[in-house]
Amino acid sequence: MLWRSTEVQINIRATGICGSDIHYYHAGRIGTRVLDPKKPMVLGHESSGIVTALGEGVSKVKIGDRVAIEPGRSCDKCERCKEGRYNLCYDMHFAGSLMLGPNHGSLRRFACFPEHLCHLYVLRKRGVALKPCHKPLIILFCAIECLKK
Ligand SMILES: [Zn+2]
Ligand SMILES: [Zn+2]
Image 1: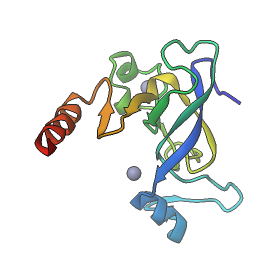
Image 2: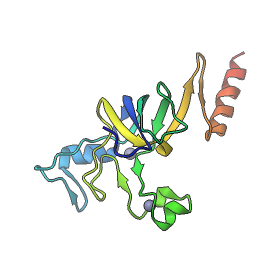
Image 3: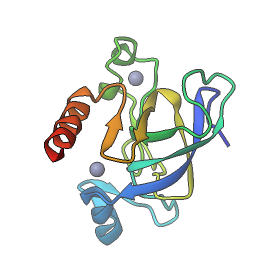
Image 4: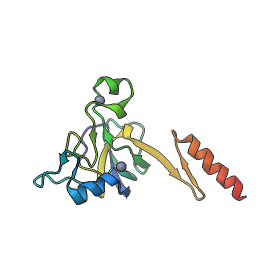
């Protein structure tokens, strides 16, 4: 089920395990943020997958797209979000964390995220091409491919 019309459902295919996941798993806390055993939380926030469903308001992402997820769910209403600096949102709900949560993470088969937090990538036979905001990486991969020839 999608939270908002601008969200997409993703079949999660890979999730990295971060230090914060390990802290929550072993200690049940990070600093003053302590898990409540009565409110379990899904961990994971470094994920990628394949888009499987679209909200009515989604315009850029398509079913079948491979996406990497940006895990901080911003409010889209505060001053920073309106300035385009949503990564500094005052009301950030970060996946797999107790920051204004618990916020369920992405270490699961399906997860929904806002379209603007899903970044497209394309796998190629040789090397990896990322688009559109990872040009330096594309250049690096191209350079490595050229050196191999
Ligand atoms: Zn992390
Ligand atoms: Zn905000």
